[in-house]
Amino acid sequence: MFRSLRRALCAAAAALLLMLAGVGAQTVHADPADRAAAPGAGYWHTSGRQMLDAAGQPVRIAGINWFGFETANYTPHGLWARDYKSMIDQMKSLGYNTIRLPYSDDLFKSGTVPNSIDFSGGKNADLQGLGSLQIMDRIVAYAGQGGLRVVLDRHRPDAAGQSALWYTSAVPESMWIANLKALATRYRGNSTVIGIDLHNEPHDPACWGCGDTTRDWRLAAQRAGNAVLSVNPELLIFVEGVQTFNGVSGWWGGNLMGVAQYPVQLDVPNRVVYSAHDYATSVAQQSWFSDPTFPANMPGIWDKYWGYIFKQNIAPVWVGEFGTTLQSTIDQRWLAALVSYLRPTSTYGADSVSWTFWSWNPNSGDTGGILKDDWTTVDTVKDGYLASVKAPGFPGGGGDPGDPGDPGGGTAACTAAYTVSSDWGGGFNAEVKVTNSGTTALKSWKTTWTWPGAQKVTSMWNASYTQSGATVTASNADHNGALAVGGSASFGFGGAPGGGGAPAVSCTAT
Figure 1 (tube, rainbow, N blue to C red):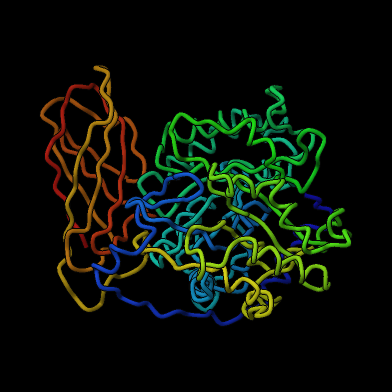
Figure 2 (figure 1 turned 90 degrees about the horizontal axis):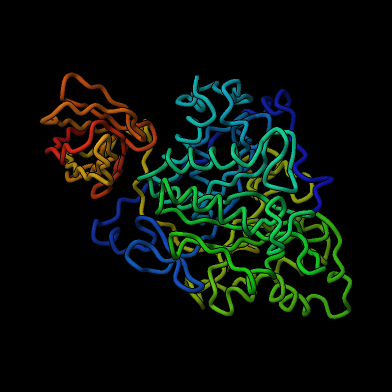
């Protein structure tokens, strides 16, 4: 896509003048049986054109893009005006069930410091002093507690701007893959993060199926997707299109014509979701907007570029970005036609094309957002266009690290199950799954076990630990301590030497 005007960003100093009240949302405590039956629980996988939850129920992403991590603010935008929790509560109240979070590889650099966050009046209090990835942990945790899901989007190699290919001289492919694996590992066991969008909007000279490993995005997506699944095999792998295939060009990232001949093939089956981007004239002109049959011609255009993947039951399709200022009549007619093409939820349920609208932010220069410039008021006209394709939220459980749990009392309890995933004699890998077995929500947990031999923890992810002799104590990370009743979280670790078997694990909850 053409980005000459895209994402005009508000200056942080001016933005901090906006001190606006947050918008809350009531928490509804569902019956446990109802919660278990609600679609969306656990990790998701694909079957034909549908995404299915852990119980095999079809699910639909109906979400919103909230950008900022990929910019020099290194945190989602708007935190200069509001508390992040109020922002997420408002997304949920409007019927969005998923957040696409763009980021850049700058987040993994030691010198990266998030900025332009307002802490006055208690806003964003639990973000103070945190790094960008820790802020991401908090956002994921609070979104999960509220029943939203998160797709992480590798938007740019650095904050300076978008790149045509998935690598640059400063951010080689090896770094791109290492950082993707680091995120996949970071959120392993936390099903709030359902997947990763590998790279945003590949475009010329990127190709699909040409076989040139320096330009073939399809081959790069396979390398990166397999790397992600090697550390977290439960994730969905979202793969965008390119700009040009066989001489036919479209939006950046929006051309998936090559999938028919060259599908993405990963080592773990049923994990690929294809992602298209589509925009209106406020972003750029395209030939189809001036067709005399417009907008009746648009379904055929979408069929050609990406819709056939859904219609032929090849794989699920997710329109990861689409948006407009909605000022022109053409744009209004385009959005109405696209929403109809995505299939109304009331008619088709989750047997529909998934989507995340661009954007929540008002400071996207060529589209604007669902929020107006005060970062609080909703553009009800724009939001109203999306009403027919919104979809139900999902079971909560990711939790808020600062949430005190259910004030109504109850019994706090947890169980832990220890599994050895691999053992090669000189070392081993294992996973511990913690489950809330009590009658109240948990805000934290701690596990303890004692090995019969000389095993030592060599590394651990999604938990912190101490070891004294043969006894290990592992406590939750910030992002996975809060567990709803019946909810679970997992952490993993490496140890040496091998051959220790699986000891009994005790669990303490608060």
